[in-house]
Image: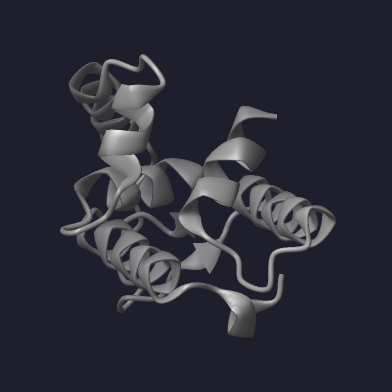
Length: 117
């Protein structure tokens, strides 16, 4: 993925997702961490976009939060989190979708489109 081509908000969401995974003692950064970060992002437009699309955002957020609670934890990682294979695939697809659309930058919305695929 072209990390230098991320919008500031999307890069911030990835950092917030990593922090969430560390706080929860998860060894892998998963798509669910990033989706929670996007939904909780202050000043982000993901909630509005999904609501406009007919998604019950609070229900979605709650369901993803519950799923995260069931993820395996690891102690002694000293804040080290690795990108999971699933997240890696979705991020690569995100990059591909942005490229196919001719977008100069990769935005959060592209991640949601990739995750839906």
